[in-house]
Length: 98
Image (cartoon, rainbow, N blue to C red; front, side, top):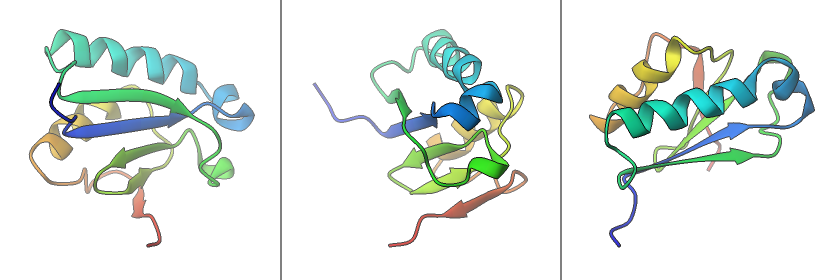
């Protein structure tokens, strides 16, 4: 099995969960399936990404970009941007500290 090009983690801790992160997770899993990217993109739930007040939050590896205030309309923008080696610059985001 080849390594994934992207690993996208969606915070599923209590604050983000209350803001709809579970639905985002399900929507992103479905989007990856519809675009036949299951062998290219891994989608996982994560614990807290430390931006609770501005969630729901999503983290994209290998770039290490965290998106805040993510909603369902943002998912395809994020996916397409990162598959082309970019970031979804119109959305609220920041790079993880190294």
